[in-house]
Image (cartoon, rainbow, N blue to C red; front, side):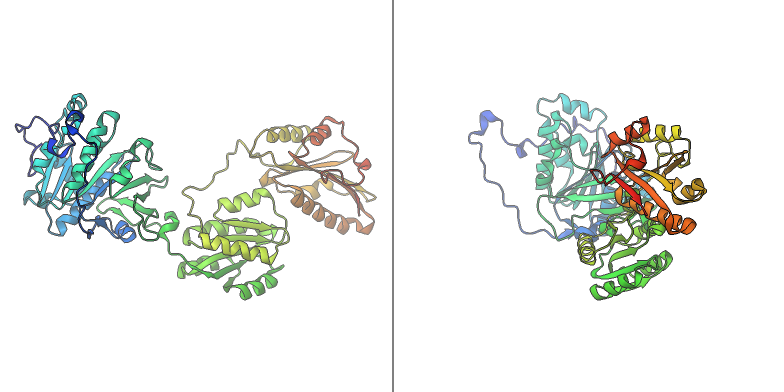
Length: 555
């Protein structure tokens, strides 16, 4: 290693020869295995990390502390320590960088990411040290690898205020480096400067178990995780608790010429980066006329509420005002699609909880889509205001979920479009879905019209089902079969209610509708019997069969 910006082949053998005086004596010389720990000194003041969003969240770094920036391979870790050094240089401090590679290359990287350090290097305010090419091999072969800090200690003068180690993994990772890692951390804690080192890990979700000792041994370990949309989430892990919220993740973006900065794309920002609203304030989006007046009257009594009738109005309200603690979307079954779109538009704009309520019985597939679109809770089928109040307040106190990194895309090979098909196609498709855990919930509805003039039954069914959700229908000479994808008994019964209304409109009060609802997988055996032709004729269906199976003749 060389100092003052030059990599010189000096007489030092390598950084393997480390301050033995700083290490415990060998066991044969140690005597008692207990020692008196030195005084840690008074409380430390705070210094800037160089990353504004990070300082805003945690209040800065402890002066004289030891920090690790851990994450998968990528430029973010190097950029972070370069910003740390730049902050010191701009404050008039003397700083040091220990890194592999050519110093001109490092300075070029620093300039490209918005931390120009050339002037500080030429003026001696920045020192750059480098590893010898055979450093790692010599350390691994050394009988006492913890001795590899003596040279660094000699070169890192006591007037330095910041030390950044770009390849901290050379000291800390690996079984052969256990003693070296502990020696490095101890050396860094004793040096008066603030030390910031990088650490490569396979996953940034958690530290590997072999590295968990680093959390109490240091002032903190930053885990940086690159999100699918290209942003970075940084979370501080430390043994001592910080102020409330200071350990929440921070979202950053890596921008050429600026480095790690606050994201400029609001939709990708995470919940902890967005301001929390007032839990007593509610934005009510009413997408239907039926029941809206009662819902609005209740909401005005229970919350400080603002009411809008269209999703775009809700978007404008949230863009102008971040103070809402929750958003309630009230929608009938026929406008569930708009409720889904509203959730997708609203979710990135607010940390408020989103609750969807429908007085109609909606399908499980609808609820899934609402939750995937950003809703925190969903109620349907005879909404009770006391339960709705409890759910809204609970969701608001927990805070809204973060915006999804990627939209949920349906696999076209798994869910076929529905419509009117041949009986053999319906049976084959139902059997396929029955074996797929994500598609195995559906209702098989049997229908037969009695005492009515001929109707265009096929057209009626095609208009009533939702082919985009995979609903299937088939009409035979005796009865019709309808597969309602994702529907359990409540939504299937609602489908029958709509069919009765259509029947009454076409044939008057004399018409009768024979029906039976079979829900898969609870009534899998009866559905299989129906497909095989061994099921009971629909005319013989009497009182409801367990569990709630058939509905007999209905007016």
